[in-house]
Image (tube, rainbow, N blue to C red; front, side, top):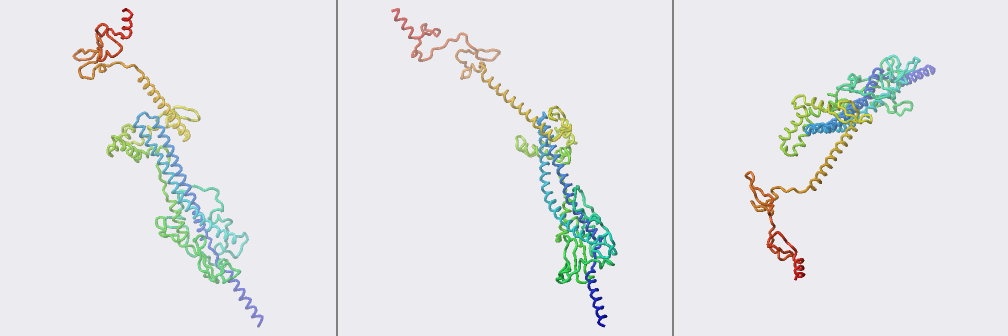
Length: 484
């Protein structure tokens, strides 16, 4: 009787031990869905890289366009057309600055999205890799924590479950997310709900066994309430007894509208909104190549607006209407006096300009349409600036020399110089004649100076009673005394 009782107790104990060790494993199919999401989240850096590359190309194109238009404005002889080219150059510079500013805005979105997406992806991969390593074995086994209903996983690496590799060798530019995994309505690649196995797999894992302060269990709170794991993409519910434990994939397959969860409260919802904002970020700008940027400056009326803003501060264009008309006229002149297809015609005119250019350390006259690097364009621009300043300096020097010569030239009397202050009279030494019906003053060859009043007060005397001969008094008196 005692022996039978002992066997019964032993069997009950074994049953109890077996029940404690026999909780459900995680469904590998559900785990693969989580892995795909983890891999897709790691595309966030690729999204950022793609948009950064686009903006960088646009900024570079705008800068090159500005250089080209500036060189064209320097060599163009027409003041109006040269001014139009310079307005286009300044507009292109603005495009480059706008692209740089947009890089700052992109960086704010990108850093937030990539940091949180990468963190969540790592959480997902780490837990599933732990379960995979604990379950995979080349030797057949009857217990596992990751697998199918009747067998453990056969995945030899986490990447075989579609999770990303531990180390990413290179970030590839990505334009769009896979809509079968992350769509406009949510995490489309997930299968929400219970992820525990049935069949043999229902009693093959001890991960979700709980006990009150049990040293042999992972969960030390009896009948643990559901807790968030892997950044909130799944909850784990540990139980003392088998059957009510569970792995539950969060219900985020849908619920988003047009790429956003309204009032997001969970981590997956916030990450989703961040990564979708990054994906949908529109890269603006004036064009991805030089020609497109130049055309944009004309077709978008940016150059015309700039011209108008400047002209209306100057006479005679201080009324908005006349300034606008003048700017429009200058654009038309640059477009070969055409009202149609102005952008193409002006860009063509810019490109056919010939400038003294520096290429490979040598100067040569080449059209601006010839291929050149940004560095060559900068050297060309500086060279033309130097040449222009030399011409201006020479002109200034020539003008200064001409002024000096004019100042030193002898004075030639003009007819008006001979006139007295009183109208109709002539100055002393000149007489008035009529020639061809006109009166004018000419030098009088018979003119004799008239002795001015007070002449007897000086040291001179007139010995003839006329104005033709004058001698000094002192020598005359001396001669008289000697003769006496």
